[in-house]
Amino acid sequence: MGANSEAGRGADDVDFGYRRVGASEKAGLVRDLFDRVAGRYDLMNDLMSGGVHRFWKRDMIDWLAPKPGMTLVDVAGGTGDIAFRFLHRLGGADAGAERGRVIVCDLSARMIEAGRDRAWDRGILDGIDWLVGDAAFLPLAARSADAYTIAFGMRNVAHVEPVLAEARRVLRPGGRFLCLEFSPAVRPGLDRLYDLYSFAVIPTLGQIVAGERDAYQYLVESIRRFPPPGRFAEMIAQAGFGGVRYRALTGGVAALHSAWRT
View 1 (cartoon, rainbow, N blue to C red):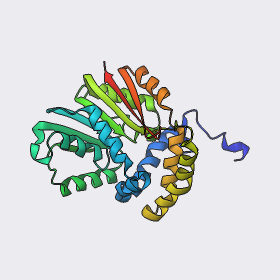
View 2: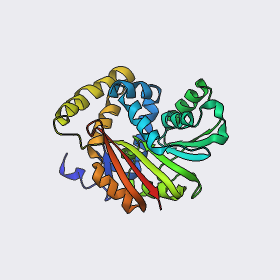
View 3: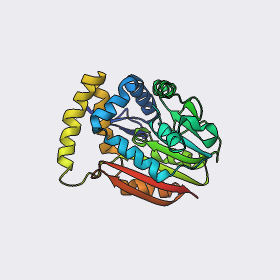
């Protein structure tokens, strides 16, 4: 870039993969990206991870341990994977909405549409509310949820701190926070192979399957820009949560964080 390229940057620039963009731009860029890939999002998750993401999400629900009557807010919940697992654990589609309720909130209207279609295909007509909204400005009342989950969405926000503050705001005292996210802290020995796969294979898969090489190039870059698990745990604690813990998954490829609203 030329010397004048930095002059136009604001003090509030943030990472969008390896690019720097204005914080106010990032939400629009992320929304557009997920609108474009929504139709092939679940297929790409299976291809990229060899289906391992399903085990990570199962671990998330295991650690949450859903209970009848629980209200879950699932942010960046897109195509409904966490919501469906939550309801299944409580008895499935036939159990009725009184067993538990999920509010799925996603920035992308196309992802919400894909999730609603999947729910109908599964015969799930009750127990899920679908909302389009920003993780930093949730359209929900304070202290209205028993649990908050976000899977593979935290690295897509402009600033982590206000999103954590919103999570705490919507949770009731004693409510549970769980975040499943890719991690840059991959175990030595696996890291080089993982980097090769990430940068050489995933964008190519994205081009072939979804026609979106750039979207999946952003995916692998955004993982490297996200804080390592220990630092992210500190950020959760600084947001006012207690009992912060995390587990490394699959050699550190992903991490699952847990905390409680005090």
